[in-house]
Image (tube, rainbow over all chains, first blue to last red; front, side):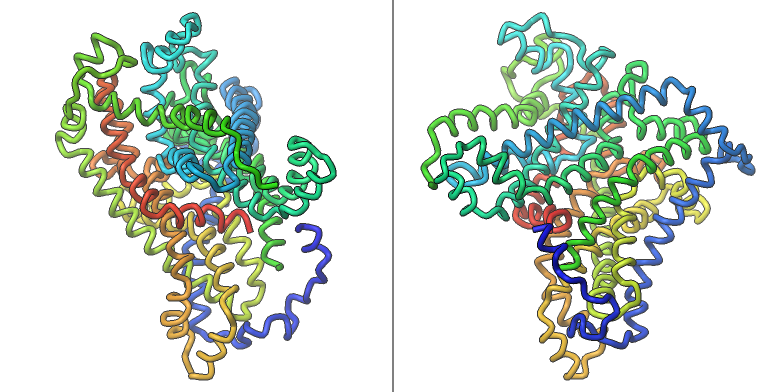
Length: 310
Length: 273
């Protein structure tokens, strides 16, 4: 599909005959139509975003004037052990949260692709967590993870008493415990994306491969997966962007604790910027998050831009 | 080729689905237990008797009810304003020869993809500067501003695909831009608007970080932020916390069950053309 799009000769953007249905003259009212949303977004998104950059070169507690400090905030980040933890945790988060939800979502999409008895119910059950807010998801799982709670009891029932522990209070398990809760909510979304992707695949290709003697595994990897390339790009970009944004669920479950072991860049930024009111330092962390996200934002945009061409 | 599923399919999927829903089921069970029962027999035990005490405590004092009302106000206002503004912008960009319209559209979409963290501190300062800090109005405008890019992008795709004959006919009838938009484009866009509305409702209702950024007074918190307060106040009363969480989850669950089709198509429309 992508190849077809690229092969299509691009019409000159300003060419008069590009689309007959586009009206030539732009009436003033239409300019107003465009400027209203544009102004709101410029004022509440792009203007603040630029402000974060300039704030990151200052030291400011919100009172009086901000003191310009050049790159000092960024230099401090390099030697800040909590920032290092947050960064490392974010890498674990991208890989763990992204990997598990993509594998889970894809596997479920393949399993539930064909309609059949019960498939609608299974799908709805897997979508359901998606509509629960991340904050509430966090509270749900706090209940699950409590000492003596369902997870511990479940482990007891299957004879794994030795694994019972304070999941959220133990620095070794807290991050992963939060991660599992986040995956539980994300899998449904990834499954939706892959189900749509699978719908767009050509079934005759798979049938031809089956006739040629390819087994199910080979058909999936050699025939179906290449057709899902476009969806994979979207899923990959969305997952990384989501990972860098993750805040609510950590805040609801651990607030970055115990001992900062579940700190992500976003929670550390919030703590610095809002709890401790280090506006300059918090902004510097925000800029780092932005710089990490930008490549994936561009990947996503590029794909959307191509889709717009058709 | 399209053979029947192996019996293993249901043998695997039924337990899996039950396990998937287990957290929700457990929270429901905990919410229906008595505090003393949880304290003596543990959180993981099955209830022996059912009570609505947890819900009564969670709703007592009216803080949760106020928070639900705040959430409802913010969600309705923000969804309507977002879709109205996005529809206007999408109409202009899709049906008129605006210079650099593709760039404008992608830049708007990019705004929605930014990590909110890069906006939080300045947004909070700007709200203070405008004197709207700690008002629901601030939360609404911030939500609208941040979501607009995505909604505009989706509606643009939809409007561009509308048959051009409709517009030519409108033009011949001497219909101006305003009337064309109101009486032709908006009605035709109903499916896309419904999908986006279902999606935006859950996003805005579920938000926590923007509320924490522009609000300060507990009485103004939407339900997500109020719940975290409840959790602080009743840190060991798991039945109360479970009940409060369920109360918070019910509105979006209703949206989901009633508008599941719109919801799912809304998720797809932006990310998977």
